[in-house]
Image 1 (cartoon, rainbow, N blue to C red):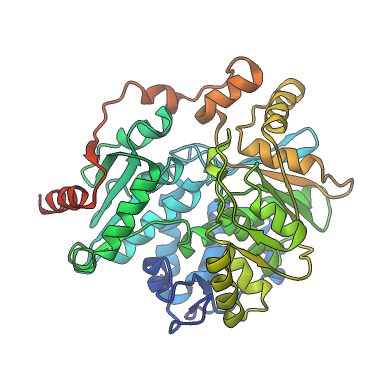
Image 2: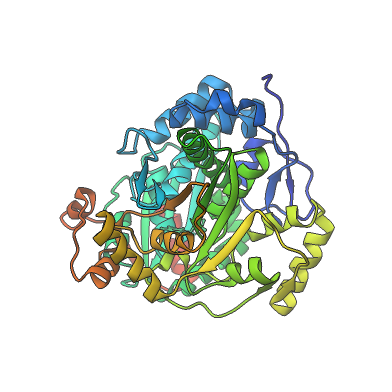
Length: 463
Ligand SMILES: *Cc1c(COP(=O)(O)O)cnc(C)c1O
């Protein structure tokens, strides 16, 4: 296929289309919307060729469609090989059968959660695009746990990149804290804020609003809305659906996805639109079920966040949902803008009709624990409390003739507390986690205000 320029537009229609490189650095579009490719490739006639490819080669095929001529093919291959060389499993995302479902393990990267799949790629894309320029990138973010550590591991040791991640001091799990603070590379700066996660978010916003500071220190964000993250996640939907549909000689499979910010499952939706052999997506939430409610009623309504044992899904406003709305509104940015304005003002929108690509449900704390117990006792497999949400909702939607793949988003050893709660003991360990507690750490504890954080950033960058 000849390479060509792929353009990206905003869901709100307010930007001049940009190329892939600009999309990677832009994150949020300047009109407040989110970036999407101007046209989605249809790959139906490539599926037969793709069915046998190992993960990294398949990733090259899929991702090249979104990169176009912004990166030569051989460079893209090197970037992807490097990104997945940090994964500990030769298949990258092994698919294992487990009773009535197949589990696709997305947690074999450096932080043992699925965010590594995209953030390892994003880090290498940043480094690649910055090489040979006079620019550098100083990433600043606020985390309540998983995203921060995956972002740190995505850019550690990379040239022309610094990363500053704020976490609420003493308020993230010990494993999550250590996955961040044991990274000693000089370009990694952990800031423990004496305050809450919201204080971190507030300081982040204040710093980004301090335009002279932002410009002077070339600040950028890694957030869940970066297009490259969605893009990298499309790949594994093709990987699993091609493998399983061939294995069972069926025309399609269904995929169950534990959902928080609607990033992972949105990637699945794009795979479906591109022609992946997936009959439907099972959207699974925990008790924070704004998305499940939307797909069942058409009403999207803001609520309170309830803390659960699957904390990475404790989200009410799903940052990628606007991308889905764009397609749901017939690719009409005016309608998206209008809906987002209504939502901003009233905290509620309603969309007519149903989308047959989805079936949705939520799992309670009791169901999650029961699922972990059942899969351990019956199949000898330990699910983490996020993956268990996807499996619990999948079990209500099994189909005799359609294989089901459940996305496993974290290694159970990361959430030992929930596993103990479910099983009464913890049968899973992971050497990388065992080791964490003995490693040296580096972090800076700072009071919760913008001035001290800015002063710290300035000091570090001038060193
Ligand atoms: C981030 C995360 C999720 C939710 O993914 P979204 O893309 O936000 O829907 C689920 N499980 C784990 C372990 C995660 O870290």
